Length: 90
Picture 1: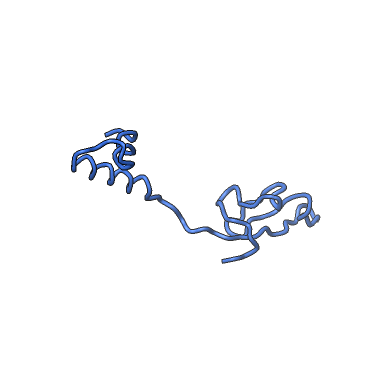
Picture 2: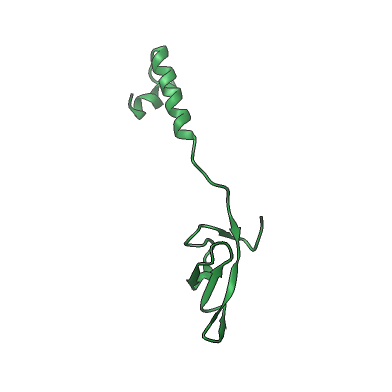
């Protein structure tokens, strides 16, 4: 069954057989189920670069995966692990 036909059956635009209706419902349930992970929260850590502490205009480190990012303090998410940078709201 195509996705278009399943949507039309579920919307009532097309009268499907009982078997088609069950298949359309199963397709909808499968489409709605998602493989998600819990949100990880982190914060940026100041990084020492050759004796210079940089936070406002240089390097920042993710406290979850320890990836160092150039200009990372502006990012709302760590580009490496996906942690949301909300200052430790866990």
